[in-house]
Image 1 (cartoon, helix red, strand yellow):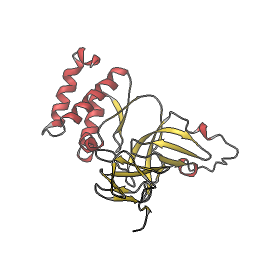
Image 2 (image 1 turned 180 degrees about the horizontal axis):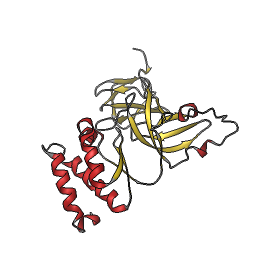
Image 3 (image 1 turned 180 degrees about the vertical axis):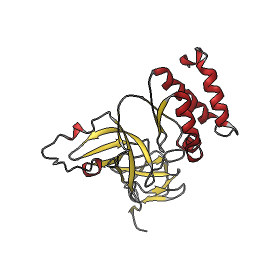
Image 4 (image 1 turned 30 degrees about the horizontal axis):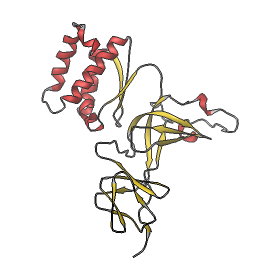
Length: 238
């Protein structure tokens, strides 16, 4: 029997899959030992730290795909690149050449002038490797830094319902709450309105859609609820 790790870091494994053989490795979260084998107990990504193997669960998580539009938060700034939290099991990367169409000499320019730690950006996923190395781009005009506004998360699996067929639900939300909206496919939502009340009203409506996604006739119901909520004060404290 060949001993050692038989899977690569960040590869996707299923419950019951053997990760390593031999006694040189230790089972971590989401794994267990059976004889001389370490086996996954979860569907997830392999994470290896030293001689410890663990699984980052994927159930219910956002799994990036090429050409997804996402909202991410700048987590770190490196030499000519940014590390971005996109609400996925692993972080994504934005390279300087993918951040702008202009030529920038990274030796002469502090790239924090574009994006700094804590900034939120709207970006496109341009690459997802087999081992979950994720690259983003903000080169196209619609992608940008998101400055003022309200940002929160919903379940990624509910995003299609919040967007609606051909954007029908989003268009209703925008018109009825007088706000700009971006719904990232990673479950991160950005709202900007003329005032905080409109932003909070849009958030309440989106949260309602998330919780009642299974119901029929939701578009018309949301219109009615938004009109009702506008005439009430109590919801602002929800």
